[in-house]
Amino acid sequence: MIQMRGQNSKYQKKKPRFKQLESYMHKYAIAVLDDWINEFPNKFGIDEVLNTSKERQFWMDGFIEFVPDLVVYDKDGITSMYEVVNTHALDGFKLHKMQYLFYVHGIDIPVYEIKADYILRQTQCPNTILMIKMN
Image (cartoon, rainbow, N blue to C red):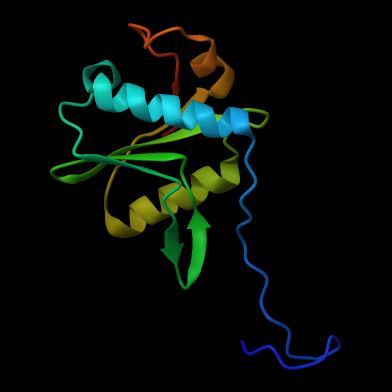
């Protein structure tokens, strides 16, 4: 919509559905996880990592529907998504949006949840990664 002059205008701009607020702990944990996946893909059950993308926006009907913390790609496309959680776990609303988008496109992409403090307590990439598969 077009925003008209004046604060009391009946033509108000739509508010975005998505607002990005992250702590430094969360951001740094994502960066460490990204490094681990690129250096040790086999520990995550990935044969080959072509690319990773932090905070990639997924759109539907002109709106940002969800933004996973880390998206992993191989030669065939997206292989997995990771949500790094700090104070709040991945909520059902966001998981539902992800699953709906996968359903609409006929794909099955695993979504994993991993705790930020677990990542940051490590001195190196552990042999076994403690994470939860959400779907």
